[in-house]
Amino acid sequence: MSTDTAATTTTAEDNAGAQANPAANQTQNQAVTDELRRWIIEQAEAGCRPDDVLKAMKTAGWAEDVALDAMEDTLRARLDELGPRKSREQALPPGVPVPSPDYDETKGPVIDVDGHRVQVLMSMTDPRVMILGGLLTDEECDQMRALAAPRLARSETVDNTTGGSEVNAARTSDGMFFERGETGLVDKIERRIARLVNWPVENGEGVQVLRYRPGAEYKPHHDYFDPVHPGTARILERGGQRVGTVVIYLNTPEGGGGTTFPDVGLVVAPVKGNAAFFAYDKAHASTKTLHGGAPVTAGEKWVATKWMREREFK
View (cartoon, rainbow, N blue to C red):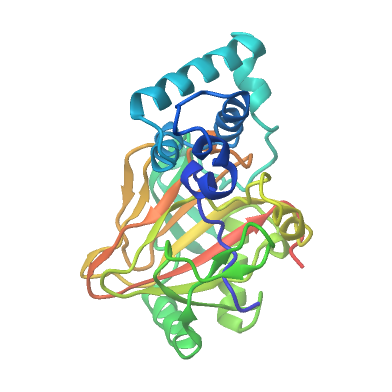
C-alpha cells in the first residue's frame, strides 16, 4: 500500500460544483426551488456545517440574506416533518463498537501495556479523545523516522468519486505507508497500539508516516469514509468503516503543527513520543472528530498515524 487513504472533509462548498447547480441555476431571480431545498437537506444530513452550506450558496451567486432564509425555512420544515424528538435520531446512522483503552481514572493516570507505561494526559468522552504520553520511546521515534525517510513522497487523500487516491491541496505533507508488520519495530508498535485500545491488530491499516515542512498543514477533515460518496463502497470492501485513529508525534517541531479539533476548540501540542487517540462510532459529524494539522511555523513535524477498521483490513 503506497498511498494515503485518509478521508478529506467533504463540505457543501466541495459539492457546490456538482450538486449546488440547483443553486447556481436560480441565482438570477433568487427563487428558492424544491430542488434547492432537497440539496440543503442532503448537505445537513451528510453532516456538512451550516457555514459551509452558506459559503457554497454564496459562491454560487446567492445573496446572503436569501441563502440564510432558505436554509432556515428548509431545515425548520425538515425538523417539523421528522418530529421534534425523533428528528435527530432518525438523521444519524447507528453507532458501532469502537476501540477503547482500559482506563480507570480512579486508579491513576497510567495504562500498563505489557510493561510499557503510557500516561493519560487528557481524556474526553464527547468526542472520545485521549492524549497519551510516552506511547513511543525517543529511540523508537528516531528509528521510525529513519526507516520512513527514504520512501517519502507527496501525500495523497481519498478520491471520493472512485475510491482511489489523489494529491489534494488540503494536505501539503510528504508521506509513506508501512505494510502491517513490515519490520520488527513496526510490528511491535502495532501490537502495542492494538493492546492499548483493545482492538485486533489485524483490523488496523498499515502505519503511515508523514513529514510536514514549514508551512505544511492538513486542513480539518474526518477520517471516516463518507457514505454519500460513490467511491466509499469500494473502500469499505477492505475492512469496513474506520472507527479509530492514533496519531503519534515522532518529534517535537520548533513551532506550530498542533492537532486541532475545531468542533470542541481543542489543540493538541505535538510532543515527541506522545499521541492523540480518538474514536468515532458512526460516519457522521456528530462524533465531533473533525480534526486537522495546523501549519508548521518552524522546523519539521513528523507523525505516525494508525487507522483502525471495523473488521480485518486486507
